[in-house]
Length: 440
Image (cartoon, rainbow, N blue to C red):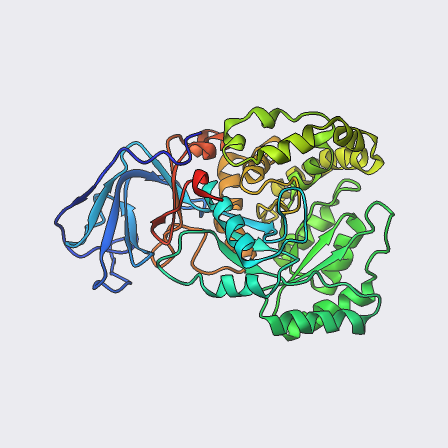
């Protein structure tokens, strides 16, 4: 695997003049010129906004943030800058997982939430180019502390945003109490589940989720809604949900849903790999032989999933077979909603056991392509649009003022999303992240 391969370029001290911001004629510096800078020169930059790539581009980074970016002929390199020759490379924003989980899983077991585990998961995500994770449930105070430490130019692991405990409750009052508790902990989102787990559990009723959404909005917290059924998608939009974070999987979406999502500017995160994880281990998956996966896979986990009794449990699970069918439905609905102009945010629901952080994000991109999205649409869904959908400032696009969260690629991701696996290095706040081999 090439994820940790260093760029063949070297850092050289060069002379120049004060850097300009952006690509237009009226360019000015936005950051403190008193701190050292470095310039990435010669790469093709795909900025995550959907704009056309800029070939032979220069990106100037100072104090962890992008000071300027544009065609090399239009961006002057500061006198104090070191230069990274990236000719022949492609530079894209770090990927954003708009629906993941961190901190609880150790091997194939949950219940191990700790600061150490949160940091380990964030390092793993980062090594695969996922530089920001929106954790939608199961977050504890240690995760909030880790989030509060990330606004620094020394960061070298994925950024984290949290939702706290998934809000439940049989009555509006009980659910609102959970909302208040999460808010007191300092969360970024409120997460609810409106799902009966294929008829196995009681679904949160409209009066409860309506009360949750109302209280969350009073606290100026957006609400991310887990769902399965088309009917509930409409009900959640009626109640004012801010973000749909799973696919509609019971039947084809209707035109009305697409129109409502566009009109309300509510984003849709498909989490296709969540479905994959429910059935793929009924036999040995092909990706168990993929070097890109094996670079981070724990041998003991693979051995457990290869065990005949484990595979039999997946094969004999009625829910696994129903979720296998649900994946086909989810992909069809993703294609329809994307074609209708709904904003898509890449999300995976990785983090629980056997939903492999980092690798599954790249599997998600491939499934999105199978659903009919173009490479540019997928890249934007995993960068600029994911940031906008989650309300995240300073990440998602390569533009002046944003954090220098970047991936260096040896192949063009617009020729196929599989080229987003051609990672030569990952940078967060202008710092190269440790390779996966260094993660304990």
